[in-house]
Length: 185
Image 1 (tube, helix red, strand yellow):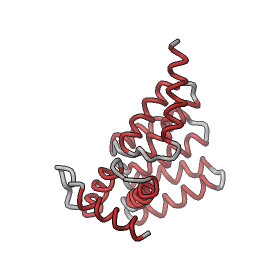
Image 2: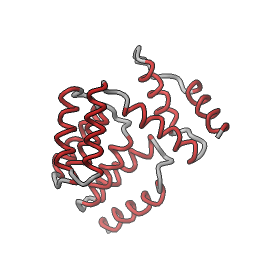
Image 3: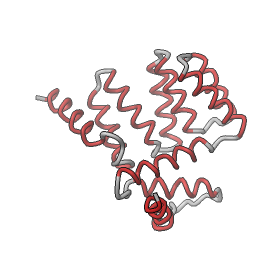
């Protein structure tokens, strides 16, 4: 665990912040972690970086938005996707550019059967944060479920440029590539 912390610290300082550094230290840390995720030396270290990124994304909104987001997540987990969508709508009224809220609302909309709404939310999340790996992962899975393996593969490849250590990354890449190549033959 000590080695993992050391690598995280090294990555934070070894990867230069993006040219457009914002005064927000949380955003600067997020940029450094996202830049460093692709260079993580192992799956274990990547998992720790992913967890920190997810925590920072969850903290981006204000306290009211965080409370509503938590309620939306609870509603989704308890099988009430329509209530989750309503809660996440409220979050987006308060924080209209919060990528994490779009990703979570996409999951709720998908569970509620609103595929077009879910896809719109994922695209909106990626507009605000093109490196939102959870949005890309979800986009890939939805595209595959909708019978569009090419779109699934495209989203998965984009995900792998950001997070090559994502769970089952290479197996899914092989499976999707096989589906797409099988279609074109």
